[in-house]
Image (tube, rainbow, N blue to C red; front, side, top):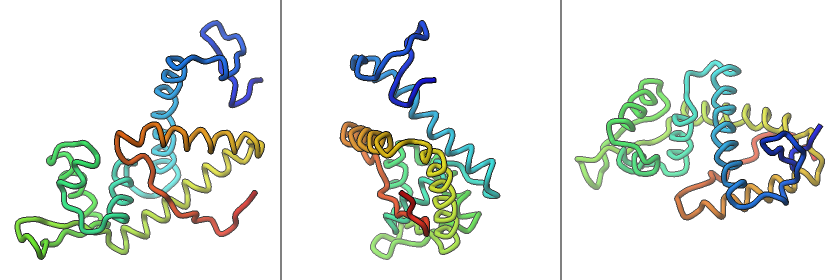
Amino acid sequence: MWSLFETRNTVGEKGHSADMNEHELAVKIIEVIPYLSRSLSAAIRDELDEEITLPQLRVLAYLRRHPGSSLGDLARWRDVSLPTMSKMVRYLVKRGWVSRSMDPRNRRTLVLTLTPDGEAVYLRILAHLEQRVAAMVQTLSPEERAHVADALEQLAALFADVGEVRQHLPLLSTEKSS
């Protein structure tokens, strides 16, 4: 058995992450990060009775932090085309989670806001994901948790120049375990 802070090379021998060069670490990051997102998406899809994707949930989160954003704002933030974002927003509007209204400063622009139902769905999903991930990381020792938290902070700082890398989420659990 090997721990979270050990890696295996291609031959399957045990090695420590301190032995990794920057290219091996880059590959590890590229290997792991997308699967973490997919795991969260699967949890939303399989464990909750909501038809929402992780990108759609991220749009709800963005609108919660930036009410009154335009479709163009969202498209630039997600680095997608306007038609792609329009389709996503149309679905969120249809579900009653986002509302569109005319921008009072520019009548040609629509502004988007999270509805109370959208806020409730977002917070419910966020609370579920928080509980799910907390259950997973509770098996780590306090030192391992600190290492993971430090590593995540370092990754956020390294990737900050490519755009928003965190959401500064509220702690939603009613019990804070140690």
